[in-house]
Image 1 (tube, one colour):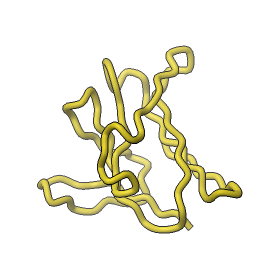
Image 2 (spheres, helix red, strand yellow):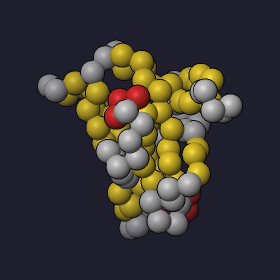
Image 3 (spheres, rainbow, N blue to C red):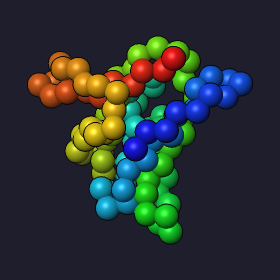
Image 4 (tube, rainbow, N blue to C red):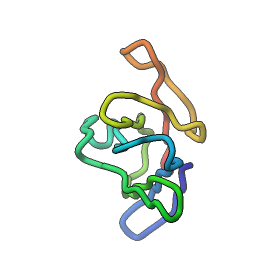
Length: 97
């Protein structure tokens, strides 16, 4: 799930995935953080049943994916779209206005 909210600093984007998607870790990785898995690690909220991370972005179109347990890439089914990646898969698109 992706939630977007206007703030004074830009658009606050909250990324959420169900808790059962990962055993140990999830990172939201994209061109907004140079595809660095350490930049935006998601936090597990066991009592709520999901992983979550909120970041503030400026207007633009961004590509992203989730890195699960440091080894598996997944997409978000609520992304604004998809685009081919150079690694024979697809990246999610996120449009910020």
